[in-house]
Image 1 (tube, helix red, strand yellow):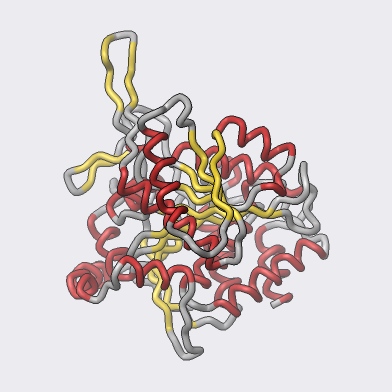
Image 2 (cartoon, rainbow, N blue to C red):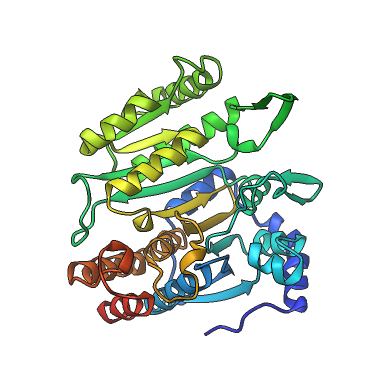
Length: 384
């Protein structure tokens, strides 16, 4: 196991290296191509920053790292303490050192974070206020595209069959900006922000993703019939981007509310869904239910220069420390990370080993089985 970079010296090195790293960044087009498909040699050593997070985070991140390391890919892991539980111990939830480390390494493998649902739980850093640690990374590093694939897996009982879709969610605006204020003693207003630039960017990302991954259809999800200006802008920018494509993709649009019904009735109809932030969050959670568990969904967050991989579920503090957490979402996010690093063969082998584990009846407890975290981990490694 690589030596963990938890000392002040290592953090200081990250911060000093940030300036030089900025000068080496690729253009947005090159960075997007790199995030979708990179070719690397067997001798490449990758650097990955690790935040274990809260609740079951340390357990599932540790398990996922074991399985990723078992593929033979050479990764140097840099681990730092961060999150709500770290704040209880040290008084610091997230600091400039965490941001400097991510700015330098540019690939982050993160566990779930506990976000207290109170009005006093805002995070203030770099002179700005954020609703959560997750939002800090998305906004500071402009991780504008959240990608959540969902598909049925053999061995898992699910409510419906035929699910094989990808939710591409705009990650930086909409009502998730956290811009709320009291108008009077009776009323709170929440600002929904949709910009032309962010809408065009996520539309092109979704279309690029579909073309790269052999997808056939991309659907813009909106409520432009009600939110005529904001969602209307999102839809119009998607339409403009789609009209520029010559690859033969089927591009269309669907109202967000009726989409949810149609997903349940006929999920196989849908392929890539391009969504504003709120609709993407809800749609991807529904997709998790359709395939049997949110714990089966990976999540990747992509910007022009940085990428963050995390589970689609929360920190589950009620089962933390019991050794029974399902590591699948964290593992499958690791599969996405391997693909981002250009280790496509390792990604394919690792996902195949996980699928074989499920097919052999070794199921985590939350999926109706009896396998604890360690048992699932050992089974996947054995099948590698």
